[in-house]
Length: 494
Image (cartoon, rainbow, N blue to C red; front, side):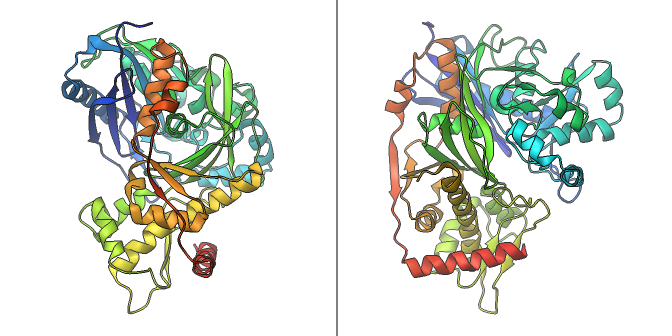
């Protein structure tokens, strides 16, 4: 049993970094958040600066320790959760990034994915990786870097440069360049890992032209992955013992430990995951088969449906259309009208994910007339996010053969009461929001605590999880059907 009882959780997200410090009762005693720059060099391209991400992590760790009134020596373990499919490349010696990281929302490899589908590769890819051929995933981003970043191929072939997702980058930086590793949940999002064997697949690497030697070592989700060295914010020798992609971490943080238990996280995008147990379940409805976590050698799988735009729709209303000044303004604006009228918004600003998988789709407002106001647009935007989740939930019900008795939600956008009530109305299922919405950080902290021996099992997190507000379906069936009909027509046009 570790003497120190505090766990530090790094939640490295798409628009910012959040660091939390939890005690052994899973209470948050300190935290910090910092946004960083989003780069849009061309239409449908989205990039991040790896050095800016690292600077945000160091900043947040320092400020979280200060808010908790702790020193780094009092930390027992570090957990990391991260935006998953975002791909980067850096020099093994010194860690200099080779160009910007390509963000999961980026669509620049759409043509490559279409070409591989036309060649009949999708069934083999799905059977091996559990995924579909879509630019969302990391593998084609690695492939693009090899072709388009100056000197990349030569450096990779000589072993001087390597690839990784954000977890790999953070572990590399935290360990002073000594560890090039990833966990199995992040590896399962690359199009390069055999989802059953949980190792890099030679045929998939060959298909995408990515040398397996350039990829990180695949490890479990709650074990020692490295120790800190040379950080400004933490002393040397602290163990990094928990890593999971953000959505798997949220599933863990929502205490969805049994098959059939499900959650939906509303962040920049929205992600619905269902625990399917120790055997992978393959989808016939466009969902993904993914690894939920691997602990003590035992792997738990999940079905996943992804909506690329959720909170990002609100950010777009704020930053792109200038409809609102701050994100929290969207709910009162939307609530100022009783309904969206005939206005429907399809939030395909980065294509459509499951169950549609149409990377060429684009965002669409439909049904506007002279009576339409910005309030109708705001309400339609919130409803459009919820409608995408409805489609995912229906697909998951068909694939799993199971109902979702209660719908656990988390993430920043789940604080929007109007959208959560509409979600419950569309699903016909109660929506349950926990008291602690930061379940992604909670999951990372708990995985780290398990890996370091702070906690011995999952009973502690079950006890710590507490329901907050419950939204029960109230909409009349005929109105619900009207919404669904309008939505389906609009999706066809997007």
